[in-house]
Length: 212
Ligand code: ADP
Ligand code: TYD
Image (cartoon, rainbow, N blue to C red; front, side, top):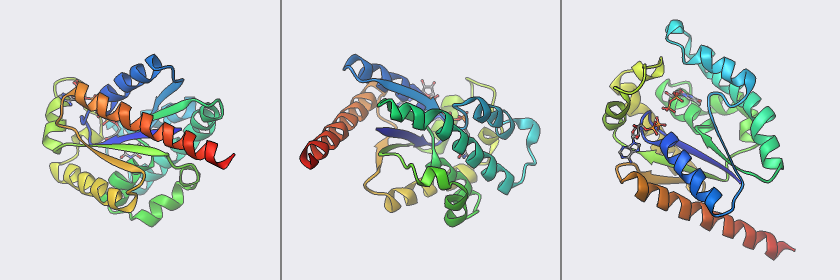
């Protein structure tokens, strides 16, 4: 099963992925956690370019193509091989990030972003958690903690547009994307997400057994 986490910067994705992974492993599942942009040798090299402040003036198209290139490489070298080994793959960001940030917030359009992400479109996640919080809350959570990368320095308007983009994606993919209220406590969120994953795994197993 392929699961992705989405949301604005500082919404809690990486914290929750760590905790959810631990809980699932305790329950006996084999989990592989990864992230985008990155997650394979070449994709991590692309990450160094695409998030680096040094390349502030990068064109919007180049940026979208770099995210798509990193994703194609990540799928080929990491995600698909791990899924073949029957692991539960959990990824911090995936194609919905490109749809929210590049298609909607940067206005490149959904069709363009889907077209350049053909390999990802052919391998969509089974389940996506969108962690929803006010962008101001997300930014304030991360502002003291790390050196800001290129996208962390975007305007408030940009972050509001990405949130609107995610809300449109929930309408577009209602069966895949689960909206989660990111203002709840970390432990509450972990429980909610673990339960949803287990429910989905049981449904998959039921459908599989029914087919046999
Ligand atoms: P992301 O990966 O989405 O950028 P992080 O997981 O790095 O976000 O979380 C950013 C910061 O917010 C961390 O310091 C984390 O401890 C804190 N945080 C995450 N989730 C919550 C939450 N539900 N409530 C309060 N603080 C949180
Ligand atoms: P990262 O440091 O991973 O931030 P976060 O903790 O918020 O996930 O930075 C990833 C940044 O890249 C983030 O601002 C979102 C952006 N991004 C895109 O614009 N498009 C994409 O396709 C992906 C994967 C990320």
